[in-house]
Image 1 (tube, rainbow, N blue to C red):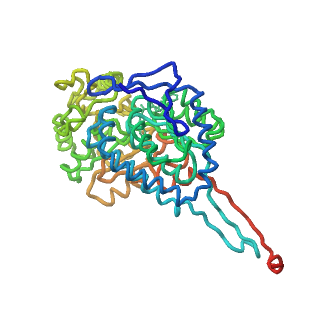
Image 2: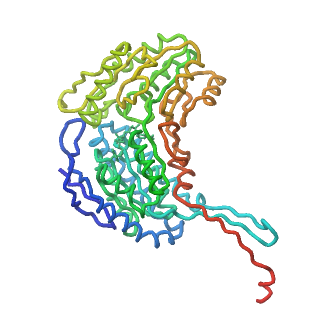
Image 3: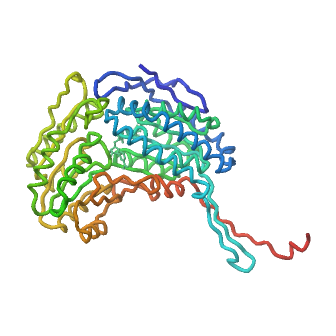
Length: 488
Ligand code: NAD
């Protein structure tokens, strides 16, 4: 069993925390490690180390800073298999899903390597006679990421590579449910040889988060997690004068028009709803059919009933367990609630058992047909392998349902009509749109968007948004009268 340590000022430190939590394998219930709930004092140490390192790191030319990221990319590639295995062990997702997650993480390192050009400002000569104006970008200072359990390897990379490339120093607070992946990644960051204090990791939960939010030295906060915590983080960051990009929960609808390719649509919707055991912020959780519904309904029920559930380490498995026994119980009770509200249980995945994994948190995919729009299941994020079906007559009604939800993370449309696709992408009030795509995850060179209760702030993670978030603009107006040159 691994005793998880913090990484502060270039040194692995055993936490002085009094409280610890077990880290468990969701497929077996076995304890993998013990994570400290670090104290505000330890957050302070990390913030001070990062502040001390900032002065030299920001003076390191961008072309030199990215050399560290090039090395990191190579190490991440070389260790992809080991990292993916660690993600599967502590999170439960399949090895294929873990590999995909790490590839998306690495993509962000690659994009951040372009910082010498991405960080450029702009200028205008002669804004008045002999006066020039210049905008340059400078790093913000010490920044921190507060991360969720569902992508232990990828999510810190939506932020950290850009922050470092822009000349900031960094603190990562991993999810206390899945801290092992970041330990392995910080071992690689140590091998890369970043100067002491440039990258730091503090483990913990609410107390560590609140200490980060209150710390006067930490200037920028990136958060990903559930909406109630997101609101707390956004409010506290603002109250303490910090910039913040805060991603919350989701309830993602997809619309299936009757002109869609049903085979392809069913396969893609099933992967979206049940992949990662439904614990993806871009998972489809409501499928709205327009017009003829029976073909899609039958096909998705079949796809749900036949999905192979088991340990994520088994390459033949298509869906692993959910994260904790509490999560499993919550999902089971929401399925029950859906049934009480009048939805029909087309496929009931509540009683899943996997041979040899009797202590795992397994569910099977579940399909609830006829979810009422005034009930809880229509609006509540289930964050499990449960797909609700709704049926309407027109695309207008379907888009209205999409826009009724309070979240705005993702919505997708399945169709072969370009006109329908344009109408949908124009009118849907969400940040990430899929057209015949089930998980519309933006590539690293696009912002990972989100609207409504799925995002608080203005600048998103990844790409140019991340560069804007991790720099502050300085505008210089300067005059050099020509008489002064005559002196030389
Ligand atoms: P969570 O909100 O429970 O935890 C997220 C982080 O906040 C963790 O680091 C945790 O330690 C900390 N935290 C938890 N409770 C806190 C409190 N009361 N005060 C301060 N900090 C606290 O989220 P989770 O269960 O780890 O992750 C799942 C959620 O994340 C889902 O709602 C999912 O939709 C969301 N998510 C969103 C996106 C997105 O891009 N919008 C991406 C991934 C996950």
